[in-house]
Image (cartoon, rainbow, N blue to C red; front, side, top):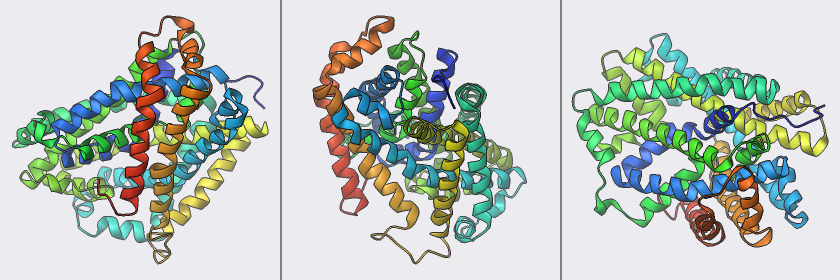
Amino acid sequence: MEETRSTFKGKLGFILAAAGSAVGLGNLWRFPYLAAKYGGGMFLLVYIILAVTFGFVLMVTEIAIGRKTQLSPLKAFEALNKKWKWLGALATVVPVLIFPYYCLIGGWVTKYAGVMLIGQVKEAAQDGFFGNYISSTADPLVWFLLFIIATTLVVVFGVNNGIEKLSRVLMPALLILTVALSIYVVTRKGAMEGVKYYLLPNIKDLSVKTFLAALGQLFYSMSLAMGIMITYGSYFSKEEHIEKATRHIEIFDTAIAFLAGLMIIPAVFVFSGGDKEALGTGPSLMFVTLPKVFNSMPGGRIIGSAFFILVLFAAITSSVSIMEAIVSGLIDAFNITRNKATVFVAIFGILVGIACSFGFGIWSDFTIFGFDILDFLDFVSNSILLPFVGMMTCIIVGFVIKPDAIISEVELNGPFTMKKFYIAMVKWVAPIFIFAILVSSILQGIGILTI
C-alpha cells in the first residue's frame, strides 16, 4: 500500500515523462498525413500557433489540477467541487477505452520493427502483408501480449523506478533518432519538393477544415483531456514552476511532430513522384505505404528498422502514461496496492485487446453501429469523450472554481506571465473551439463530414 504519493525526482524527469506521454503514434503518423492533406506549410503554421496558445492553456490547467489536488482524475474533480465528481469518472473512462486498442496497435508496431530488423522489408512492402497479418488469429496476439507486458512492467515499478527511468532513456533516444532520420530523408534526391510543400505556407490552403484538423490533432498529440496530465501533475513537485515545465513539454512534443512530418512527407514525395495522396490516412500510411518507401530506398532495412524502433519508443511511453492514469485512479478509489491495480488493468487490457484484434479476423462480421470493435472504441473515446471532457474542464475552471484557483497553484513558484491571456482562453475561447471539435468529430465519425 502506498503511504505517500510518489513524486518525480526532478523537473527534467517530469518533463520527459509528460513529453513521452504526449509524443506517441499521433505525432508520428497522424500529424504527417494531416499536414499533407491540409496544405503542408499552412497546416504546420496553424498547428504551431494553436500549440503555444490553446494547447498551453489546457496543459497548464490539467497539470495544475493534478498538483493542487494530489489526486488522479477520478478523485481530483470531486476535490475541486463535489458536484463535479461525475467529470472525474468520465475523464477516467477515456484512458480505459483507449488502453486496450492502443496496446494492440503497439503490438503491430513491435511486429514491424521485428520484420525490418530481420530484413523482411520486401515482404512487408507487399500489398496484402498488413491485411493478412491483422486478420490472422494468433500472430497479432503474440506481439500485442509482448507490448502490453512491457508496458505493465514499467508501471509496476512505479513513478521513479519505472516511468521516470524509462523516459530519461527513451525520450533522448527518440529525439536523436528522429533528427537523424529527418536529415537522411531531406538529403535524398527529389526530397526538396516535399520539404517545400511541408514548410512553405500558402494562404490558399487556409480553411475551416484546416483549423479544425489542427485543433483536433493538438488534443491527440498533447495527451489532453485523457486524465494523463492530471495524473502526472499529481506527481509534480510543489517546488517546480508549472508554466516553465509546460513550455518545455510543448516544445519537445511539437518538435517531434514537426520532425516526423519532415521525415515522412519528403520520403513519400520521393517514392510517389510528388503525389501527396500517397500519404494516405491512418494505418495505411505507417503499415502499408512506408514499408514500400523503405523497400525503394538504398539502406531501406536500416532506415525502416530505425523508424519502427522510433515509433515503438513513442508508443511505449504513451501506453505507459495511459495505463498509469487508470492505475492511479484505482489506487485512489479503492486504496489498493500498485501491483494489484496494475495487474487488474493489464488483464482488462488483454481481454478487450484480444476482442479488438479478433474484430479484424474471426469476428470481422461483428460491428457496433457500423464500426469494428477497435474503431468503435476509438470513436467513443477520441471523437466524443475526449473533447467533451476538455470542454467541461474549461467550464469548471472558468465558472465554478474560477481561474484564480489554477493561477494560485501556478504562482507558487513565481509569477504567471500569461495570466490575463489564460483567463480569457479558459473561460471563453477554449470551450467554444472545443465544442467545434466535438461537433466536427461526431459528424466525421458518422460520415457526414470528412476531415
